[in-house]
Image: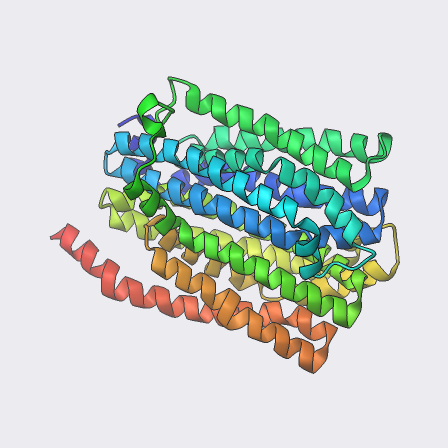
Length: 454
């Protein structure tokens, strides 16, 4: 055991969660700033239709993220568990397999998407006015997709293997570079929406170099070694099994983005699609802060579950749920009290896009006080390797609740009904999540804790 693993097993849960979560929160918040920075600069430097074009790229970005999390999230959780089981050598092999899988998957996805880019964007709701913006942005992003996959995949493993501060620094580094380059490319060099994409890819290249250097360093507890780069069927299946839950989440996020784009385009036009892009960026910022807590929770839960410290696992869950609930509540209040100020940050003033964004924010964020609970519990099951339960909860919110509510809301109330589908689905999913957690604790965890005490 090194000092990091000793802390995971013995340090006070509150202090431990804070030490792991704070860097993850900063990193997650900074990561969500990619979307916000792009939309702010594009909204002021290119125009409202460019924001709508950017919204059309969300489904493709979600698919790319889905494939990345299939490997990255699965490998991170599995490595934490193996470290708790004192199986460092296998954790090293998981790291090597994760790198190779990210390379293969990202190259295949980029080639396919670039070949059929226009057809994909039209399928996802592009119009003649918005297609050029979406195309120019995605050509650059897809060209750098390999960099993105390696950077985010290895960064999550860095955090899970006991280096949360270094993982935070890598994200802050990329955001800083992006903030510096984006206005230069958009305003000074007049590269438009392509310039925003270039700034993103270059900044992520800097981050990738940082994380690769970490895993090449002999002082790193989990690091690249010659024997780790041989693909192993058992490791791949274990990684995919755990990463399947977030993979499915992002796949259905892609499907939902397509459905929302089409419904908003039909009931509100291209600018309604742009308003959703802004609202979704604000919501994503809140969710990413919550994910910061879950990322801090993940190595603590994974390690202690593998080490048989079940009471510490449940203590970590309770504290993380409380933190997620507070964050969701603050996000809801900000959207209700200051929607005009938020909307004006992305637009040039009191125009149609601003009005649509204000109305959407006030409705969309209503259920966020309970969103934190639902997200934390889903990630909690994933951290313990309970992929089926994590998948069930993810599908419950996105498939069984949200998709039907979108069509029903659009049919009954048009544009306001589309916005209202999200909070209704969130409340329904939170109730189901509470029931699943109660049943799991009663049937599974209570008996494990009893056996340990005996």
